[in-house]
Image (cartoon, rainbow, N blue to C red; front, side):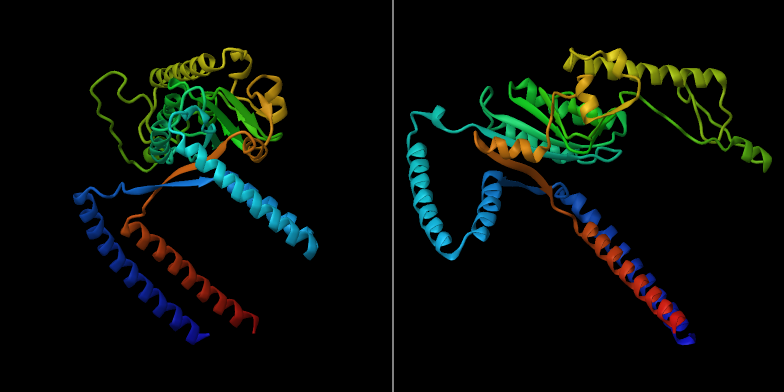
Length: 353
């Protein structure tokens, strides 16, 4: 047991030294990257989903066949693929008939946190799609998952989706799990909202909460002062003493934000009874359909697989390259976690023995 204790202390010292060294290197490298202005570098990822779903189907078909059937099927498939390639080549060479090209469905993904951190990558993907999408012909599908978050962050994310509709391109939002509060603010921009049977939607409301330590500070004879210029510069505070006047102004601001939220949803889904649904409540998929928060009950997979029969379905995403400090941070976190796990495992084994 004494050996393990000494080993644990030694390991802790080594890990501390390594982390300190990495932090210093990260700061230096981060500063260098900022000076060069290359911290926003990334690349666009394009993947044709028709091929993905076709390969899945062909894979299971091949496994269910006998050797004789598989050989015959493989021969017929090669013949069919050759004919399709020939037809595609003929379409591409016909420059005078661009309308003969198949419609495209561009698939974007947004997995939102409280700060809507993926807004920047969504913005870049939308800009790329809008540069090639044809109004009245192509479609954009956003696979959306978010429980909401900061008002201004989700307001910007929703505004990015508004760019698609303003260009006359049909926008469909698919919600498999949740699009609530700020998530629904984004979803309501779509021409059509499709949700799975138990997806969570709604929560059209605004909430703000904060602790107040003023009584604790007074109890310990600690003074806290807030100096402001402007009557409403600080209405509520964490450490100071909140007044009824400040509290009332804060509530007025919340109510005004809620009004703006309701107006935003009503403009994009005028068929909604906004007074009935803007109570902060949530609805599951089928119930959401009844109150017209969504237009159809279906999973995103089902919708996209069906779409492959009528169009080229293309997944588009912008993958930001991680900076060296970020990579070092991830590596440090993984190494630290592994080291702690090893120590705990050793101690646990010693205890068992």
